[in-house]
Structure formats: structure tokens, C-alpha cells
Amino acid sequence: MTDWLGLWLRLLDSSHALLDFMIAGGVVMWALAGLCVLFWTLVFERFWYVRRVFPQWGRERRQAWQQLLQNDAGNWQRAVRVAWLAQARQQLLGPLRLSKTLVAMYPLLGLLGTVSGMVAVFDVLAINGTGNPRGMAAGVWQATLPTMAGMVLAISGLFSLARLERDARRALERLANQLRHD
Image (cartoon, helix red, strand yellow):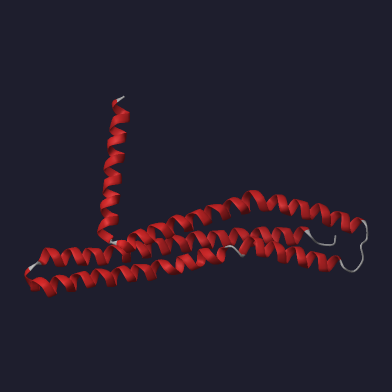
């Protein structure tokens, strides 16, 4: 029982530390957190789609392709193949555009946090002069956190998008190889 209590207390301490971190970064940190949740939801959906949904769609196209080849459908087999591959490309790579846009927004929002934090520093300087180093440090801290968070999110986003694009292109190549005249 004490293990569960200890775990619960550590989790509670961690959540308070995260909340303090978010508050210290200002409003921009909350915007970054919201975009982060949206981005990773999209990424996990794409991983699921490429691994679970698209293979079934590809199997259906392969079966239909085999029927076309058996029926000797004529010269339009090539047009059907090109259309299916274009459709597959759109299904696999099209939804990644929004994720790429979110990754590009992370550093920009971090920069916005830097500017708002520096405005806080200048406010302290205007009111108190240079005699309040704690007030200035809080503004610098508020300026630094969103910048760091934006860069960390952008870097992790770039890696995950590169992986997704690679997996999508491999699935597309596999389908193109399977929809050939043998």
C-alpha cells in the first residue's frame, strides 16, 4: 500500500512541477502545449493508418488488380494503376502537411515567448530601474522557457515526421511494385 502512496505523491509532485514550469513560461507555453497535443495526436493517427488501415486498402487494390489482369481489360490498366497510386500517395502523404505546418510554428511561438518575456524585463526596468534583479530574472526566465520548448518540440517533430514520411514512401513503393504486369 505504501508503494502506491509513494507513487501517487511522486506523480503529484511531478504534476506541480510541470504546472509551475508552464506558468513560468507564460501564455505562449500553453499555446505550445496545445499544439503539441494536436501534433502528437496527428502523428499517432498517421502511424496507425500506415500500419493498420493502409495495408488493408492495398490488399483490396491488389485483388482488384489481379482481376483486371485476368480479364485482360485492355489498355486502360495503366491508367487504373496510375490513378490508384496517386490516390495512395494522397492518402499517405497528404495529411502530413498539417503536421509539417505545426512543426514550423513551434520555433515561431517560442520566439513570441522570447519577445513577451523581454517585454516583461523592460517593464521591470521601467518601473524599478536596475535595482530589482529578481524581477528581471523572472522576465528572462519567462523569455527562455518558450524558446527552449519550441525548439525541443520542433526537433522531436522533425524526427517523427521524417520517420512517418519514410514509412509512407515505403508503403507506396510496395504497392507500386505489387501493381505491375508480370
